[in-house]
Length: 144
Image (cartoon, rainbow, N blue to C red):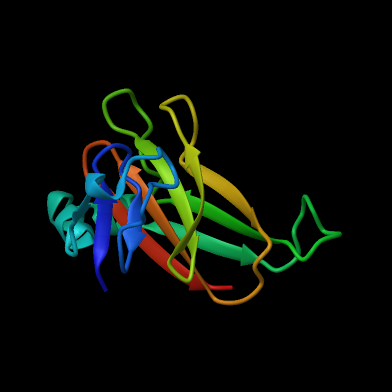
């Protein structure tokens, strides 16, 4: 699978670069092909498996919008919670379904590295990509 990363905002596109970045609006020319980006990030951090890999929990019944076909995607960064200090923190967490972008949540050092995405999709696979300011991009996926 080809992986493209936006030089402007760090958005990851799978298979091909979009005509326009869905996060920052940058043109296709702003995307750089980086098929090994997740491997490179793992090489930067020996603690990657416990502090960077997103943990995903899928709740089939949405706690916020149960009247629609909504599911909750609960994400926590790290089996051992990732630090959130001004020097070392998670910048954003992106959500994809079947490798198609759905949403981004930005984080600051004043928050915990955890989010909930409320999705209309009820089938497929969800991919979560997170960006650590020191150790790059990390990914995990789960069945919906």
